[in-house]
Length: 307
Ligand code: SAH
Image 1 (cartoon, rainbow, N blue to C red):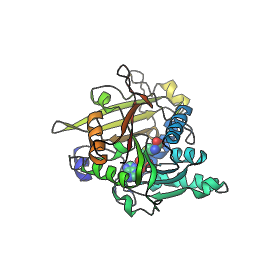
Image 2: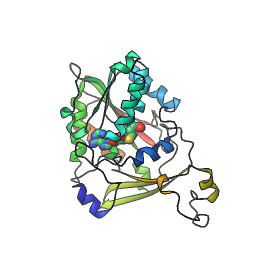
Image 3: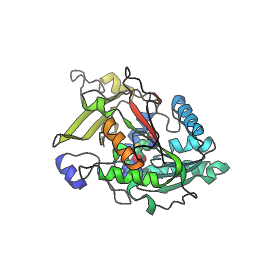
Image 4: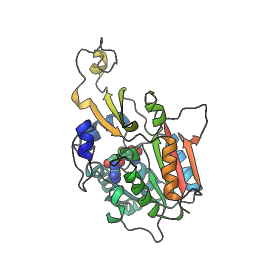
């Protein structure tokens, strides 16, 4: 099925994760360039840290399942705050950074307890995870991760399966915290806002956005990141959008492409409610603040409770 998508449009650098799903990070290149984009990998913005921790405490969370842990950035801040954290990611290239960071801090009891495994959202029950008693207090899937899952069949089957697996990992009363970029804004022609609640990037970045429609449905958004790293790139104007200033293409190692499934807010609400039930308590935040129709958030964050 992924062949089908690639036959239309080359969506990513090639590579297959160890458990058989396309791994956009498998060539290791995105991990490297991404680290330039996000700046200090070990750090989240203090805004994000405060909001996330306050929200977890408000919901009496102790055990957390971070299902898109990447290099461990969210997991680490939660381990540091005293939560019991279990982390998975489908990309072993990403996990190796998390494993290394855990190793370096293994003498701290909280890090010694931190569980990290490879796991795919579509097959979470097969991952080497010990689920606590009735399930985790909280599943988190943040940083626009969920949009990495393509809609292979055109009916959101894969998304529903993944959300079901998240729900089944929770204890009754536990919460799923999941986000996506504001794709309503992006497919309407807007640039993805580069204001980022998650990262504190200092690197100048230019993002080219392409939107693919299949049979009248938004199927894919591709973001081509061009990141200026060296001073001479900026002096040469290589990161300037103006073709006049561009003497030659920026160095190849500063460019990478990621593709996302464009979750529109209404549709995403529908997917969550289909799996958790229409009566489930569901709150949507915009950049971690209550929704405000006069604002155009960069990210929508959903908190939904298992009944
Ligand atoms: N929470 C992190 C992750 C963002 S990157 C952050 O905010 O920085 C998204 C991650 O999702 C990547 O590490 C990718 O490997 C992972 N991912 C994508 N599809 C997945 C799947 N089907 N199962 C598990 N992990 C997946």
